[in-house]
Each structure stands twice: as C-alpha cells, then as structure tokens.
Length: 321
Image 1 (cartoon, helix red, strand yellow):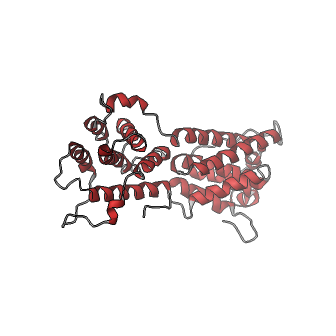
Image 2 (cartoon, rainbow, N blue to C red):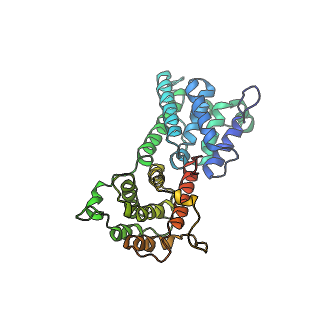
Image 3 (spheres, helix red, strand yellow):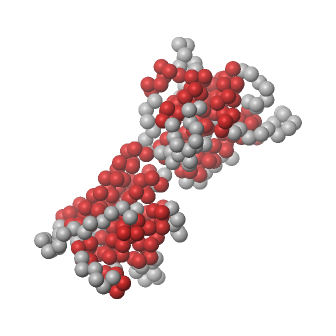
C-alpha cells in the first residue's frame, strides 16, 4: 500500500478500505485508521490529503460500529473537522464548471472515490471514459465528505462511549433498608436471550456494575458480579457499545480474585458457569444456599474469564494476574 519512498498505492488502499468495511481486512484496520487520521491532519488541502480525507469518509461507518477505542474515534473526529474547515475555506476550484459527484454507500464505490482523487492518471488508464474525475478532487466536494464523516463520528462518540444513566432503577432494585433485591435484578437481567441486546437487561446489568463500583454490601457482591457477567458475555454477539462494556469490566475488576491463588477446597473440579446457569446461581448465592454451586473459587474463575473476554472485546492488553 505504501512504497519505500512513501508513495501510496491508492488502488490498493481502495481495495483494503472495501475489504475492511465488508469485515475481511488484510491488515490491522485500527492501525490503518490511525494512519489515515495522521495523513489528513498533516495536509488536507494537498491531493494526497484530499484522497486521505475521502478514505476517512469511506471508513466512517466501520469506525462508528467497530472501533472500541475512544481515543481513535477522537483522533478521527479531529482529522475530519480539520479537513472540513481547511477544504471549505479553499472552496471549489472551478465554480459552475462541474457538479458535485453523486456517491452511495457501496464500499467499492466509496473506495473508488479515494482512487480517483489520489491517482487520477492510474484511474483514467483503467477508466478512460470517466469525464468527471476532477470533480471528485474538488476541495469543495471533499469538504462535504469530511463534514459528513465528522458528524457520523461525533454521533458515535456520544452514543457508543457513554453508558446510559441508571439512577432511576434504585427504586426497583433497592429494598427499603438499602439492600439489593437480587430477585428483581435477575428478573430483568434474564430477559437477555439470544444475540440481540435487550435494553432492560442491559440497564439492569449497568445498575449492578455501578453498585459494585459504589455501595455494594459484601454479601451482595457475588450476585451482582454474576448479573454483570451475564450481559458481559453477550457483548460481542450483540455488538454492545464500548462505553457499556468498559463499565462492566471496571466493575468486574473490583471483584476479589485472590481466592484463585489458593487451592479449591472441593476435591472435584467445578464445571464452568454457563449462561443459562447465571440467573439461578445469583439467586442461590443471595439466598445463602450452599450446595457447592456458588463456590467462591468457581465464581472467581468465571469473573476472571469475563474480565479477559471483555478486555479482548475492547482491545485491552492487560489481564488479571
């Protein structure tokens, strides 16, 4: 894609952008997006900068739904905003001589916009009948692409990197004496079935996560962690918002895993905790019924698994010791 002298193969870049949007990138898509942002910020008015701005635009929906790092989203927003400002000030190079091209959401067509701008000679060699090629490189046209990308990414930042408020659920999940009503909590949590995220279940798990991070009583912590784990285990299947999964993980990281440093007192290995077991196990633990199912070693192993799982989803390298 980039030669030793720094030249960009725009046809190759266009193909990689389309592959990325389709979900089959050849390289690291997050590294590619970071490089695109850097290129756009350095000189958006140059032909290379305009091509990279188009590349940012072409990848906006991938970034919106697949990027889990808020810093990368912020970097892309900054780049798109800078390009929009610079290119809008530059304006159209030939007012009245051409109309803005019409482009759609097709990944291949979006990639072709990048190739047209970055390497017009190469494009014309393949498509000699393309009479509107310079209209794609017009600063005024590319400014519109930058503005559109900036708005999509700003919306993503607001919607996907903030966890919804759950203070209103105190009335439902707290008893008169300030304890957690585990049965009411798990009634909402167990609404989560299949891959599609249930908003009521997610809100309950977020409430449980905040309770773990705040005023959870010692006797509640295991059941609360199980409630959080139930939704955490669905994060990849349901494409959960990174802000939501981050809160799940922060809460689970407060759970005491030190029991794993000691041998389990039970002679036989415990089975793993399956999704269907979580609601009943949380209720069993809360009721103080000890049949071995709620062994602290078994629960801690499950929580550690969910910490690792959510860390993988978020692209976090660190894992519990």
